[in-house]
Image (tube, rainbow, N blue to C red; front, top):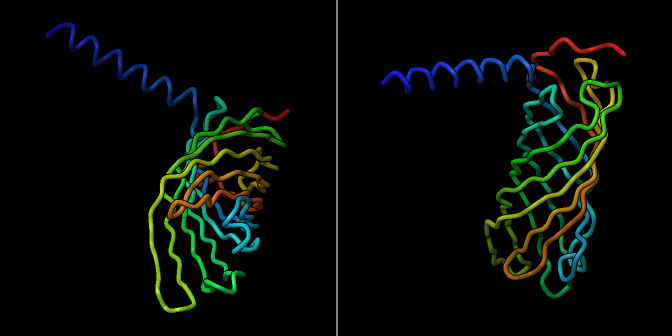
Length: 188
């Protein structure tokens, strides 16, 4: 019993220390950009189109950031045989490394995974829906991270299949992040 108490006290102290060292802040933002289908047959049917999204992140002083992003892409088919449109709604859980946390300009790299919800409506009135697991690798640049409002530009590559077809894509986005609980930052 004594060793359990010691372990609990030690775990509590380590947790409190970690939170203090990390000085984690919560970021909430939105982004807009282009979703670019890259592989056949998806790229022959659907063109580059608007991508809208939102993001929520937990950012630490240690460079590690955990987050979730929700996005929306919809496009009409360019295939005269099938016609119709597709809607893609990915929810991606991610981890990223900020190379210079809390600096004026902060480059980052990350990886994410999660469900991609597909809804395909064909010109003949039929439809098909599917939820597929996908992976995203991404990188970007946060600007003004030393302030409560940040601008961000990001590029990414999605790896996902839909109904046996490769629906992988690239995406390029820009957006604004708001620090909901700004922590004190070093001034350089």
